[in-house]
Image (cartoon, rainbow, N blue to C red; front, side, top):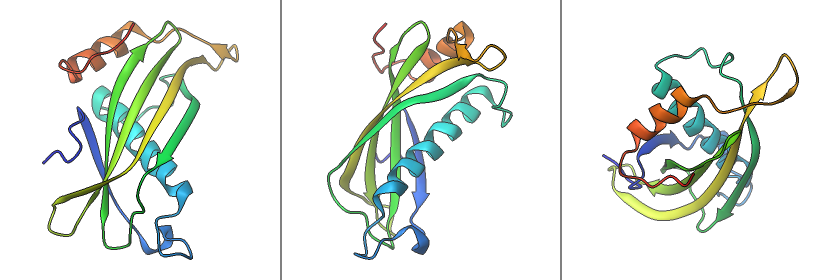
Length: 147
């Protein structure tokens, strides 16, 4: 079941250690959940867990908090690629609460990230591989991607 309406979704269970003193999901953990979705997206897309050879790094990330997540819920992280550049691409995130019955709840947060192609040998940015762009287009054929 897709809770977010986004072309890729990854569900994270809220662990007790993720909760802050106010009983909410700690703000920093939202970034961890977006990272988990991003890594699983790329691993699933490329059908490998060997991601160290891909040469993509995080250039920027942001999160707008809308509603607190609570222990006992899960967080569905929807993700879509929204823009391709020559050396970078943008991701958009939607995080929603999922209760124990699996019902979709309120929107928790929205986020954005920019991933940058990177040449580790020469320590500089690099072009995003065409094969990766094509795989992403195939994975989300009905989601618009700006060029």
